[in-house]
Picture 1 (cartoon, rainbow, N blue to C red):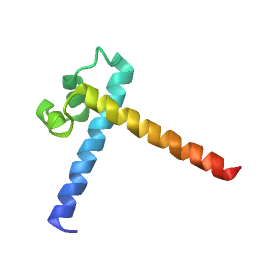
Picture 2 (cartoon, rainbow, N blue to C red):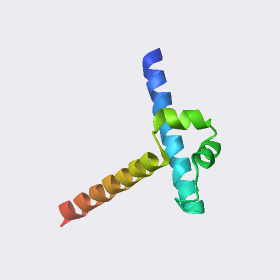
Picture 3 (tube, helix red, strand yellow):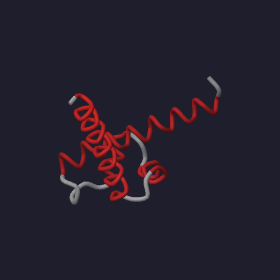
Picture 4 (tube, rainbow, N blue to C red):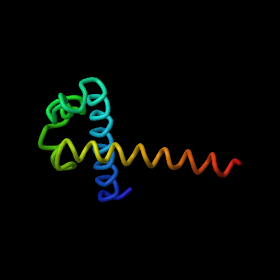
Length: 83
């Protein structure tokens, strides 16, 4: 694996880690009470790292919603194909 490929994989893993942490924090605290600091702490990264990947807490939520909608769409397509 090349260095570039490894870096890209690590970036994607870090991004996914931040999204997982945000999902947990949002569920536990509610979106309005959750902070980027909470997300960073849960993901074990700095607050600055979170902002390298996402512009704001709202942007993180938008990514989580799109991810969820994509999963739902996939399940609906499978259900439709099975009929």
